[in-house]
Amino acid sequence: SQTIHQWPATLVQPVGSPLSLECTVEGTSNPNLYWYRQAAGRGLQLLFYSVGIGQISSEVPQNLSASRPQDRQFILSSKKLLLSDSGFYLCAWSVLARNTDTQYFGPGTRLTVL
Amino acid sequence: GDSVTQMEGPVTLSEEAFLTINCTYTATGYPSLFWYVQYPGEGLQLLLKATKADDKGSNKGFEATYRKETTSFHLEKGSVQVSDSAVYFCALSGGLTGGGNKLTFGTGTQLKVEL
Image 1 (cartoon, one colour):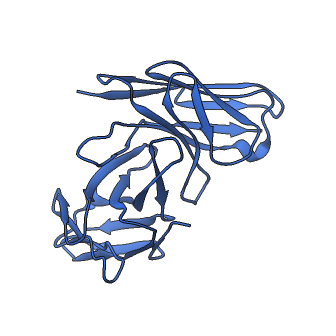
Image 2 (spheres, chains in turn green, brown):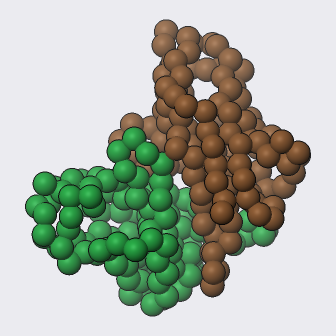
């Protein structure tokens, strides 16, 4: 069966510090990978997605970046965090099957920028 | 662009009450529709889905029917339990440039079930 891991689970960082969040998927090959952010009391916003190694697309302009160095690894980064980067970051994976692309989510990382 | 509208919460019910959470959508083409559930402090779990008009998704006593004519995907459960307390998200799936599918989410509806 497939599993998705995210770490760290919780992170508190000062403004201006760097960020690296990691997501890995097990039990599947060549998944589509996604990073979402959930701000407090709001819905989820797609930040980045990747359909293959080294292929990254951004949905919204921001000071975050993403990389996919391996097939089942997806990393979210920032060189300098802003207060507005606080939120709950969720990684998701999907594989097209029967013309449906269901996304499955990891446990999330709660980031607080102070 | 695509959008999903959910009823405002929080919704507070007594145990064994009937639940309806309304969801309507705007989309081009024929998206797949989903309900996800988020328990406190956790990620999202897929609750049910429907991929075409008139499909009914069901899981754990929850049901939702894909109504193309009313562009709706309302979530229902006949008898809620305290353990159903969570935030429920309606979402639709649309294509992304270069592959993959983007989920567009509603803002979520918080459900609280009391004894």
